[in-house]
Length: 122
Image (cartoon, rainbow, N blue to C red; front, side, top):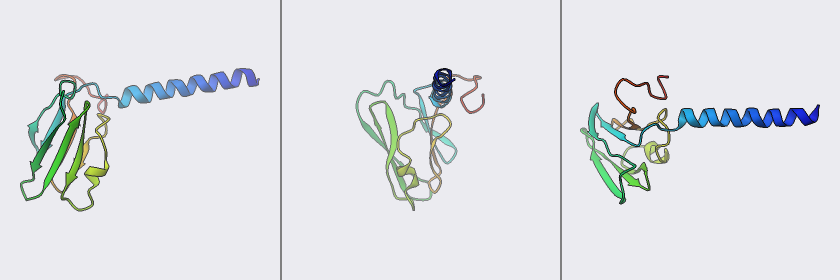
């Protein structure tokens, strides 16, 4: 019985890990940076060869500085209370965007193409 049980458990865990990874993995390298409901920029992380920063000024005052580096994007500094957006780390998943509520900033992966379902809507 023990010889059959562990391979089945290992196979089930591998299947769960693969399903989770494919559901959470972004289907696009294009990122949408939205502030106050307005699309500000759409960098393609796959084409960004050099590191660069983008500083966004919130309409009511304040700022967020984003860093694009090695095919990733993250918030590196902000003057919002709590700095939750900085602590979120890099954008990894279509289902978990980077958000700064006080500055009304959302950084998310763009859907693969118009009309397609993204990882959240599927």
